[in-house]
Length: 129
Image (cartoon, rainbow, N blue to C red; front, side, top):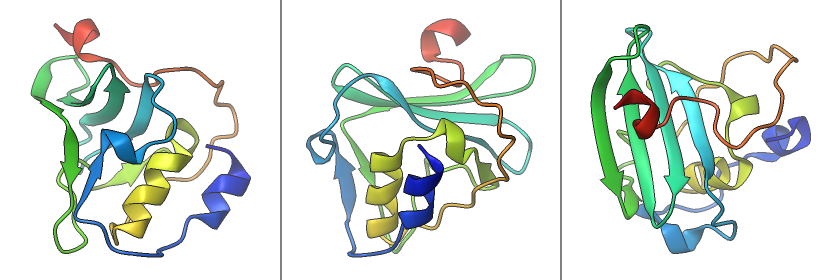
């Protein structure tokens, strides 16, 4: 996501789930990349017809994994969003906008200014298996 996209994220309407069909861009890519309170990496990405969620530690050990057709949102909360910080430069604007429209707060970390655009930022399930 660009800085301009980051700045226009705003809450507009409430959603109960984000479906694959909610995304205009269906290309495989990182949707959210960040970390939890235990400093484990959290990577939510789109590949094929699934959202894939992986959480792994600094040693690359897979701690949790789930493939989903939709991302549930309940009372402005989404389990699959990192509970500490999200790297905004390594996350997808379209997906973050859908989360914000669903009332889900996203806690972004500061920019490091040196992120090179790429398809996937965190490790994928195939890299962790």
